[in-house]
Image (cartoon, rainbow over all chains, first blue to last red; front, top):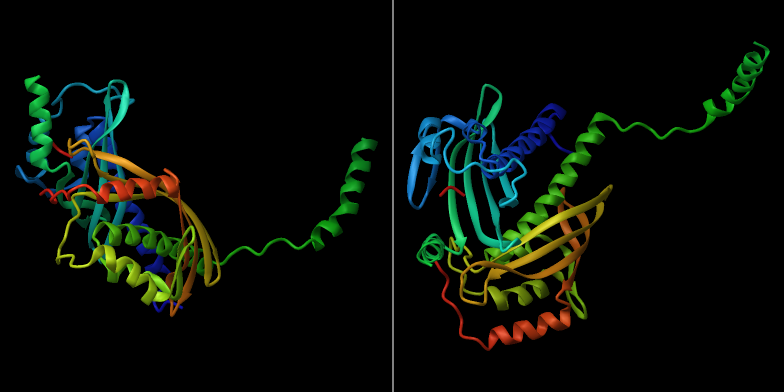
Length: 159
Length: 195
Protein backbone atom coordinates (compact mmCIF):
# COMPACT_ATOMS: atom_id res chain seq x y z
CA UNK A 1 0.00 0.00 0.00
CA UNK A 2 1.20 3.48 -0.82
CA UNK A 3 2.81 5.54 1.93
CA UNK A 4 1.47 8.73 0.36
CA UNK A 5 -1.79 10.25 1.51
CA UNK A 6 -4.95 9.97 -0.57
CA UNK A 7 -4.69 13.72 -1.22
CA UNK A 8 -1.15 13.35 -2.60
CA UNK A 9 -2.08 10.36 -4.74
CA UNK A 10 -5.13 12.10 -6.18
CA UNK A 11 -3.06 15.21 -6.84
CA UNK A 12 -0.59 13.16 -8.86
CA UNK A 13 -3.37 11.72 -11.03
CA UNK A 14 -4.88 15.19 -11.51
CA UNK A 15 -1.49 16.68 -12.42
CA UNK A 16 -0.84 14.01 -15.01
CA UNK A 17 -4.29 14.45 -16.57
CA UNK A 18 -3.84 18.24 -16.64
CA UNK A 19 -0.55 17.89 -18.51
CA UNK A 20 -2.05 15.36 -20.92
CA UNK A 21 -4.73 17.95 -21.61
CA UNK A 22 -2.07 20.54 -22.51
CA UNK A 23 -0.47 18.08 -24.92
CA UNK A 24 -3.87 17.56 -26.63
CA UNK A 25 -4.90 21.24 -26.54
CA UNK A 26 -1.64 22.30 -28.15
CA UNK A 27 -2.51 20.25 -31.24
CA UNK A 28 -6.16 21.30 -31.26
CA UNK A 29 -5.22 24.99 -31.09
CA UNK A 30 -2.44 24.55 -33.65
CA UNK A 31 -4.71 22.75 -36.11
CA UNK A 32 -7.57 25.24 -35.69
CA UNK A 33 -5.16 28.19 -35.82
CA UNK A 34 -6.37 29.40 -32.45
CA UNK A 35 -3.22 31.32 -31.67
CA UNK A 36 -4.62 32.98 -28.53
CA UNK A 37 -5.39 29.55 -27.13
CA UNK A 38 -2.02 28.28 -28.33
CA UNK A 39 0.06 30.91 -26.55
CA UNK A 40 -2.12 30.66 -23.42
CA UNK A 41 -0.70 27.18 -22.89
CA UNK A 42 2.74 28.67 -22.29
CA UNK A 43 4.08 30.27 -19.12
CA UNK A 44 4.58 34.04 -19.51
CA UNK A 45 8.30 33.39 -20.06
CA UNK A 46 7.71 30.03 -21.76
CA UNK A 47 9.92 28.93 -24.62
CA UNK A 48 9.08 27.32 -27.95
CA UNK A 49 12.09 26.06 -29.86
CA UNK A 50 13.03 23.94 -32.83
CA UNK A 51 16.09 23.54 -35.03
CA UNK A 52 15.36 26.87 -36.74
CA UNK A 53 14.88 29.16 -33.78
CA UNK A 54 13.94 29.85 -30.19
CA UNK A 55 11.09 32.10 -29.08
CA UNK A 56 10.69 33.13 -25.44
CA UNK A 57 7.53 34.65 -24.02
CA UNK A 58 3.96 34.68 -25.30
CA UNK A 59 4.49 37.76 -27.47
CA UNK A 60 7.49 36.25 -29.21
CA UNK A 61 5.65 32.96 -29.74
CA UNK A 62 2.63 34.83 -31.12
CA UNK A 63 4.91 36.77 -33.47
CA UNK A 64 6.53 33.52 -34.60
CA UNK A 65 3.04 32.28 -35.53
CA UNK A 66 2.43 35.45 -37.54
CA UNK A 67 0.39 37.40 -34.99
CA UNK A 68 -3.17 36.88 -33.74
CA UNK A 69 -4.49 36.69 -37.30
CA UNK A 70 -1.37 35.18 -38.78
CA UNK A 71 -1.43 32.63 -41.53
CA UNK A 72 -4.25 31.67 -43.81
CA UNK A 73 -7.68 31.22 -42.24
CA UNK A 74 -8.49 27.63 -41.43
CA UNK A 75 -11.98 26.23 -41.19
CA UNK A 76 -12.93 25.33 -37.60
CA UNK A 77 -13.60 21.77 -38.68
CA UNK A 78 -9.91 21.38 -39.48
CA UNK A 79 -10.41 19.79 -42.84
CA UNK A 80 -6.90 20.09 -44.20
CA UNK A 81 -4.60 18.62 -41.56
CA UNK A 82 -4.31 17.50 -37.99
CA UNK A 83 -1.75 16.48 -35.40
CA UNK A 84 -2.26 13.24 -33.50
CA UNK A 85 -0.40 12.90 -30.19
CA UNK A 86 0.72 9.67 -28.68
CA UNK A 87 3.11 7.92 -26.30
CA UNK A 88 3.35 10.76 -23.79
CA UNK A 89 5.68 10.03 -20.88
CA UNK A 90 5.16 12.52 -18.06
CA UNK A 91 7.43 12.87 -15.04
CA UNK A 92 6.11 14.92 -12.13
CA UNK A 93 8.24 16.68 -9.57
CA UNK A 94 6.17 18.93 -7.33
CA UNK A 95 5.37 22.12 -9.22
CA UNK A 96 7.61 21.13 -12.12
CA UNK A 97 7.18 18.37 -14.67
CA UNK A 98 8.73 17.10 -17.87
CA UNK A 99 7.31 15.08 -20.72
CA UNK A 100 8.31 13.47 -23.98
CA UNK A 101 5.62 12.74 -26.53
CA UNK A 102 5.29 11.83 -30.18
CA UNK A 103 3.14 13.41 -32.84
CA UNK A 104 1.98 12.43 -36.28
CA UNK A 105 1.03 15.18 -38.73
CA UNK A 106 -1.59 14.10 -41.24
CA UNK A 107 -2.16 16.26 -44.30
CA UNK A 108 -4.90 16.25 -46.91
CA UNK A 109 -3.38 15.35 -50.26
CA UNK A 110 -5.51 14.57 -53.30
CA UNK A 111 -8.49 14.46 -50.91
CA UNK A 112 -6.89 11.63 -48.95
CA UNK A 113 -5.20 11.71 -45.55
CA UNK A 114 -1.44 11.40 -45.92
CA UNK A 115 0.99 10.82 -43.07
CA UNK A 116 3.28 13.75 -43.76
CA UNK A 117 5.52 14.07 -40.72
CA UNK A 118 6.31 12.33 -37.45
CA UNK A 119 8.19 13.98 -34.65
CA UNK A 120 8.79 14.37 -30.97
CA UNK A 121 8.06 17.02 -28.35
CA UNK A 122 10.34 17.39 -25.37
CA UNK A 123 8.66 19.52 -22.73
CA UNK A 124 9.13 21.17 -19.38
CA UNK A 125 6.13 22.33 -17.35
CA UNK A 126 5.62 24.62 -14.41
CA UNK A 127 2.63 25.11 -12.14
CA UNK A 128 1.74 28.82 -11.91
CA UNK A 129 -1.11 29.93 -9.63
CA UNK A 130 -2.39 26.36 -9.59
CA UNK A 131 -2.42 25.89 -13.38
CA UNK A 132 0.12 23.90 -15.38
CA UNK A 133 1.85 25.79 -18.19
CA UNK A 134 4.52 24.94 -20.75
CA UNK A 135 7.86 26.29 -19.55
CA UNK A 136 9.67 24.97 -22.63
CA UNK A 137 8.68 22.95 -25.67
CA UNK A 138 11.22 21.63 -28.13
CA UNK A 139 9.69 20.36 -31.38
CA UNK A 140 11.81 17.97 -33.38
CA UNK A 141 10.95 16.58 -36.79
CA UNK A 142 12.12 12.98 -37.16
CA UNK A 143 10.43 11.27 -40.10
CA UNK A 144 11.28 13.08 -42.31
CA UNK A 145 13.93 15.21 -40.63
CA UNK A 146 13.68 18.99 -40.71
CA UNK A 147 16.10 19.18 -43.64
CA UNK A 148 14.18 16.52 -45.57
CA UNK A 149 10.87 18.19 -44.74
CA UNK A 150 12.15 21.52 -46.12
CA UNK A 151 13.37 19.80 -49.27
CA UNK A 152 9.97 18.21 -49.78
CA UNK A 153 8.27 21.60 -49.49
CA UNK A 154 10.86 23.37 -51.64
CA UNK A 155 10.38 20.77 -54.37
CA UNK A 156 6.61 21.42 -54.17
CA UNK A 157 7.23 25.16 -54.54
CA UNK A 158 9.53 24.56 -57.52
CA UNK A 159 6.98 22.38 -59.33
CA UNK B 1 -58.03 7.77 -4.78
CA UNK B 2 -58.74 4.14 -4.13
CA UNK B 3 -56.36 3.17 -6.96
CA UNK B 4 -53.61 5.33 -5.44
CA UNK B 5 -54.11 3.64 -2.07
CA UNK B 6 -53.88 0.22 -3.69
CA UNK B 7 -50.71 1.23 -5.53
CA UNK B 8 -49.15 2.54 -2.33
CA UNK B 9 -50.02 -0.72 -0.59
CA UNK B 10 -48.50 -2.73 -3.42
CA UNK B 11 -45.30 -0.65 -3.28
CA UNK B 12 -45.11 -1.00 0.47
CA UNK B 13 -45.47 -4.75 0.12
CA UNK B 14 -42.43 -4.89 -2.15
CA UNK B 15 -40.26 -2.61 -0.02
CA UNK B 16 -38.97 -5.16 2.48
CA UNK B 17 -37.81 -7.33 -0.41
CA UNK B 18 -36.04 -4.37 -2.02
CA UNK B 19 -34.48 -3.38 1.28
CA UNK B 20 -33.01 -6.82 1.81
CA UNK B 21 -31.58 -7.04 -1.79
CA UNK B 22 -27.82 -6.69 -1.62
CA UNK B 23 -26.68 -3.52 -3.35
CA UNK B 24 -23.08 -3.49 -4.62
CA UNK B 25 -20.80 -1.87 -2.09
CA UNK B 26 -19.79 1.63 -3.05
CA UNK B 27 -16.01 1.77 -3.46
CA UNK B 28 -14.14 3.79 -0.91
CA UNK B 29 -12.10 6.84 -1.89
CA UNK B 30 -8.98 4.74 -1.31
CA UNK B 31 -10.25 2.08 -3.74
CA UNK B 32 -11.21 4.67 -6.36
CA UNK B 33 -7.79 6.35 -6.25
CA UNK B 34 -6.12 2.93 -6.35
CA UNK B 35 -8.07 2.02 -9.50
CA UNK B 36 -7.01 5.29 -11.19
CA UNK B 37 -3.39 4.66 -10.22
CA UNK B 38 -3.49 1.07 -11.44
CA UNK B 39 -4.95 1.94 -14.83
CA UNK B 40 -2.48 4.80 -15.16
CA UNK B 41 0.44 2.53 -14.32
CA UNK B 42 -0.67 0.02 -16.95
CA UNK B 43 -1.10 2.75 -19.58
CA UNK B 44 2.47 3.74 -18.74
CA UNK B 45 3.55 0.22 -19.65
CA UNK B 46 2.05 0.61 -23.14
CA UNK B 47 3.96 3.84 -23.61
CA UNK B 48 7.19 2.53 -22.12
CA UNK B 49 6.89 -0.55 -24.34
CA UNK B 50 6.57 1.61 -27.47
CA UNK B 51 9.37 3.88 -26.26
CA UNK B 52 11.67 0.88 -25.67
CA UNK B 53 10.97 -0.39 -29.20
CA UNK B 54 11.45 3.06 -30.71
CA UNK B 55 14.62 3.59 -28.69
CA UNK B 56 15.89 0.06 -29.44
CA UNK B 57 16.49 -0.33 -25.71
CA UNK B 58 16.53 -4.04 -24.91
CA UNK B 59 17.05 -3.60 -21.16
CA UNK B 60 14.12 -1.19 -20.82
CA UNK B 61 11.98 -3.53 -22.91
CA UNK B 62 12.72 -6.62 -20.85
CA UNK B 63 12.25 -4.73 -17.56
CA UNK B 64 8.56 -4.34 -18.41
CA UNK B 65 7.98 -8.10 -18.13
CA UNK B 66 7.29 -10.10 -14.96
CA UNK B 67 9.78 -12.73 -13.86
CA UNK B 68 7.54 -15.31 -15.51
CA UNK B 69 6.49 -12.98 -18.30
CA UNK B 70 5.76 -14.28 -21.77
CA UNK B 71 5.86 -12.70 -25.22
CA UNK B 72 3.86 -14.51 -27.86
CA UNK B 73 3.42 -13.89 -31.56
CA UNK B 74 1.78 -16.79 -33.40
CA UNK B 75 3.89 -19.86 -32.84
CA UNK B 76 6.78 -17.82 -31.39
CA UNK B 77 6.76 -18.01 -27.59
CA UNK B 78 9.42 -16.53 -25.31
CA UNK B 79 9.22 -17.15 -21.56
CA UNK B 80 11.10 -15.22 -18.89
CA UNK B 81 13.43 -12.23 -19.09
CA UNK B 82 16.40 -14.23 -20.47
CA UNK B 83 14.49 -15.63 -23.46
CA UNK B 84 12.80 -12.30 -24.15
CA UNK B 85 16.12 -10.47 -23.88
CA UNK B 86 17.73 -12.89 -26.32
CA UNK B 87 14.88 -12.31 -28.78
CA UNK B 88 15.07 -8.55 -28.63
CA UNK B 89 18.82 -8.12 -28.21
CA UNK B 90 19.37 -9.68 -31.62
CA UNK B 91 17.51 -6.73 -33.13
CA UNK B 92 18.70 -3.98 -30.80
CA UNK B 93 22.34 -4.69 -30.08
CA UNK B 94 24.84 -1.81 -30.03
CA UNK B 95 22.24 0.94 -29.64
CA UNK B 96 24.24 4.08 -28.77
CA UNK B 97 23.36 6.07 -25.64
CA UNK B 98 20.83 8.81 -26.29
CA UNK B 99 19.70 7.19 -29.53
CA UNK B 100 16.66 8.84 -31.15
CA UNK B 101 14.92 6.69 -33.73
CA UNK B 102 14.44 8.59 -36.99
CA UNK B 103 13.41 5.57 -39.01
CA UNK B 104 10.36 4.17 -37.26
CA UNK B 105 7.99 4.61 -34.37
CA UNK B 106 5.15 2.71 -32.80
CA UNK B 107 1.82 4.33 -31.95
CA UNK B 108 -0.38 2.60 -29.36
CA UNK B 109 -4.06 3.36 -28.96
CA UNK B 110 -7.48 2.26 -27.64
CA UNK B 111 -6.30 0.57 -24.43
CA UNK B 112 -9.11 -1.32 -22.72
CA UNK B 113 -7.82 -2.14 -19.25
CA UNK B 114 -9.62 -4.26 -16.68
CA UNK B 115 -8.06 -4.42 -13.21
CA UNK B 116 -8.87 -7.20 -10.76
CA UNK B 117 -6.79 -6.87 -7.60
CA UNK B 118 -3.17 -7.68 -8.40
CA UNK B 119 -4.03 -8.93 -11.87
CA UNK B 120 -5.25 -7.08 -14.95
CA UNK B 121 -6.03 -7.74 -18.58
CA UNK B 122 -6.12 -5.42 -21.54
CA UNK B 123 -6.66 -5.21 -25.21
CA UNK B 124 -5.04 -2.45 -27.25
CA UNK B 125 -4.08 -1.67 -30.81
CA UNK B 126 -0.93 -0.39 -32.37
CA UNK B 127 0.45 0.82 -35.67
CA UNK B 128 4.06 0.86 -36.76
CA UNK B 129 5.25 3.73 -38.94
CA UNK B 130 8.44 3.61 -40.97
CA UNK B 131 10.13 5.92 -43.40
CA UNK B 132 8.36 5.47 -46.71
CA UNK B 133 10.04 2.90 -48.88
CA UNK B 134 9.62 5.18 -51.92
CA UNK B 135 12.53 7.29 -50.62
CA UNK B 136 10.38 10.36 -49.90
CA UNK B 137 11.18 10.19 -46.19
CA UNK B 138 7.51 10.52 -45.29
CA UNK B 139 6.11 8.33 -42.52
CA UNK B 140 4.21 5.32 -43.79
CA UNK B 141 1.97 3.03 -41.73
CA UNK B 142 3.36 -0.43 -42.37
CA UNK B 143 1.79 -2.65 -39.72
CA UNK B 144 -1.42 -2.60 -37.70
CA UNK B 145 -1.91 -5.04 -34.90
CA UNK B 146 -3.48 -5.86 -31.58
CA UNK B 147 -2.02 -6.62 -28.18
CA UNK B 148 -3.88 -8.92 -25.81
CA UNK B 149 -2.21 -8.68 -22.42
CA UNK B 150 -2.21 -9.99 -18.90
CA UNK B 151 -0.54 -8.00 -16.13
CA UNK B 152 0.54 -8.81 -12.61
CA UNK B 153 1.54 -6.59 -9.70
CA UNK B 154 4.99 -7.76 -8.58
CA UNK B 155 6.41 -6.12 -5.46
CA UNK B 156 3.98 -3.26 -5.92
CA UNK B 157 4.90 -2.67 -9.57
CA UNK B 158 2.76 -3.67 -12.55
CA UNK B 159 4.50 -5.97 -15.03
CA UNK B 160 3.53 -7.77 -18.21
CA UNK B 161 2.70 -11.39 -17.42
CA UNK B 162 1.73 -12.22 -20.98
CA UNK B 163 1.72 -10.14 -24.14
CA UNK B 164 0.20 -11.67 -27.25
CA UNK B 165 1.16 -9.65 -30.31
CA UNK B 166 -1.34 -10.22 -33.11
CA UNK B 167 -0.49 -8.58 -36.47
CA UNK B 168 -3.66 -7.84 -38.43
CA UNK B 169 -2.76 -5.65 -41.43
CA UNK B 170 -0.72 -7.19 -42.92
CA UNK B 171 -1.12 -10.70 -41.55
CA UNK B 172 1.91 -12.43 -39.97
CA UNK B 173 2.57 -14.30 -43.23
CA UNK B 174 2.40 -11.12 -45.30
CA UNK B 175 4.54 -9.22 -42.77
CA UNK B 176 7.17 -11.96 -42.89
CA UNK B 177 7.46 -11.58 -46.66
CA UNK B 178 7.78 -7.77 -46.31
CA UNK B 179 10.49 -8.07 -43.66
CA UNK B 180 12.47 -10.57 -45.72
CA UNK B 181 12.27 -8.19 -48.70
CA UNK B 182 13.44 -5.28 -46.53
CA UNK B 183 16.38 -7.26 -45.23
CA UNK B 184 17.54 -7.85 -48.78
CA UNK B 185 17.69 -4.10 -49.43
CA UNK B 186 20.72 -2.00 -48.44
CA UNK B 187 20.26 -0.40 -45.02
CA UNK B 188 19.33 3.29 -45.02
CA UNK B 189 21.42 5.50 -42.72
CA UNK B 190 19.49 7.14 -39.90
CA UNK B 191 18.58 10.69 -40.79
CA UNK B 192 19.27 13.39 -38.63
CA UNK B 193 6.71 26.35 -39.47
CA UNK B 194 5.63 25.13 -35.82
CA UNK B 195 4.87 21.49 -35.18
